[in-house]
Image (cartoon, rainbow, N blue to C red; front, side, top):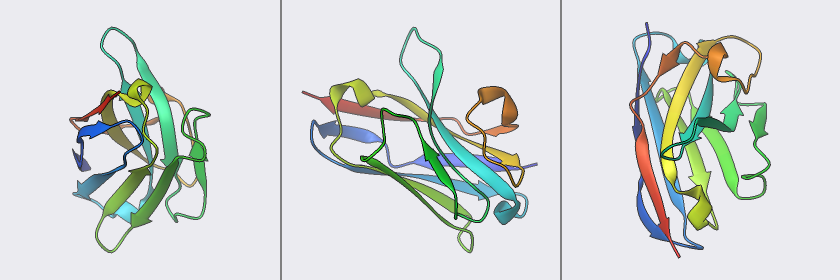
Amino acid sequence: QVQLVESGGGLVQAGGSLRLACAASGRTFSDYAVAWFRQVPGKGLEFAAAISWSGRTTEYADSGKGRFTLSRDNAKNTVYLKMNNLKPEDTAVYYCAADKTSLLYTTISQYDYWGQGTQVTVSS
């Protein structure tokens, strides 16, 4: 069992930056791929970014390419999502999710463990 806790959300003006953190406990975090999904009220979860267990492979949704950067510190059991040049359309609840795999997935169903989410609000 892996427990995930997100932090770092908040209110920021358009063009600003935030760094989200996903802290894990319970198992060897370095065995897990981690993804970030986001959800706008009234809409389904949307893939944002994912990072492999080693940190060597990342994948980003088109909406975040060039603006979002994933990194991980397995010694601290934490994955970070740095978001730059934020836009109002990035406003959402951001969830991190983990799966014990050496592969990288963008689909919701692949991930077994989820955090509670952190709100990101970008004002125009």
